[in-house]
Length: 192
Image (cartoon, rainbow, N blue to C red; front, side, top):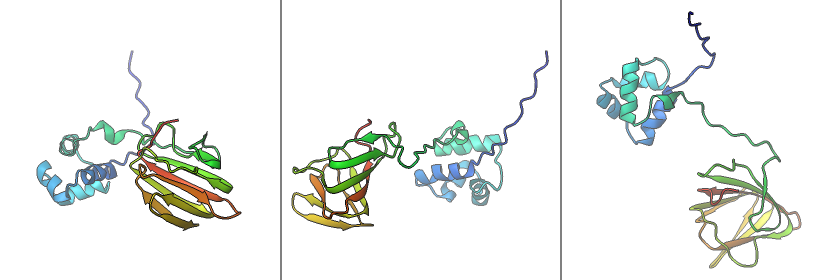
């Protein structure tokens, strides 16, 4: 029995940007990588811009220098899509809010939450903390005050406030229109 040839997929693989990203994440310059790998800077530049394909041995050498596997260059990117209004409802403890998780439940690096707050809504009378290094609040719509132990910040639509999640704080809506808030927490403090 004779093996049948496998039909190639029409998917093109762009490895140059992935090699560049790996180099940059290590803080290496093109000159440094080219020198270690025994390549010219110009050739490495053409590889990173997908203008030329390296030989298998050159690719293996580059991956060794960049501490990545050859296979990682060909993996499908992990992309998650959440359509508007479809993220799971969650409750972070706010009053008079509808909160939806916009990032996948399994995402541990960052958590994005959209809160729609009715007039009079608030985060509670007492200050609270979030187990995250960074808490970034972006006010999409409304008038909001964020309270800390020693000061208050009044935000208008379009304003952004970034602080340590472990800093005691609370918030409340200031007007009769309600508010819409985007919370970005890094890393994700919990997985629903």
